Image (cartoon, rainbow, N blue to C red; front, side, top):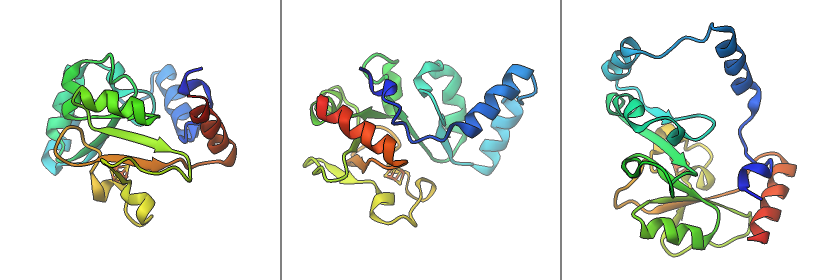
Length: 173
Ligand code: SF4
């Protein structure tokens, strides 16, 4: 079973469904050069994708938006098969220490969700929000692709049943 089939993703789907409904109705505003200019003018930070995998969209569509922004965070579960240029901007989302090692050996920085009591690997630091919940991604930006920064691990969080599905999944790997 794939991770995506466990139902353990922490994203609440209400907003995602609203966007989808608007998109289908043709009323969801498209992002174009005007919006990219605004991002550039104000150097707005972005998260590369909010649900689904950003690498499902061609790199050349995303890069002008990323370059216009001042700072970003982003993650991909498709690290093993996506356009390798994504390494510059995205973290490889991984579930196990061996998968993390495999991605790191290919030049990715990794972001690994771990069960509540699991130890960190030697080359990982705990997500800053897990250390102190007053720290948000928009203050931190550690998860922004390849650099000499450490790999990140974060303790699984969200609804209890989602956490439980995740722990079951990881224990089967
Ligand atoms: S380390 Fe945690 S708080 Fe910082 S960018 Fe990554 S996910 Fe966000």
